[in-house]
Amino acid sequence: MVGHILWLAGISIAIATRSINTWVLVVAAVSLVVGAVAAYIGWRFYKQKSQKAEIWAAFLWALPVSPVLLSLTVLGVTYL
Image (cartoon, rainbow, N blue to C red):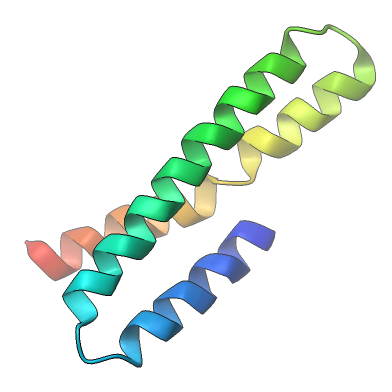
């Protein structure tokens, strides 16, 4: 949910500018990088094998799913 809201804010700012194509790439790149970082940190939590760490790992793995999928969709619509 948090990732989705941040993604929507970024795309809304991108649409409000004149250089939409550039900002779509920036928002997509940022969401992909944040998704990769969240997945890496989630993996590190998962390796700790405690119940609390597994909860954080699940949260971090689920956090970037929506923004990354939405970014890929927007990139496909914009550039294909």
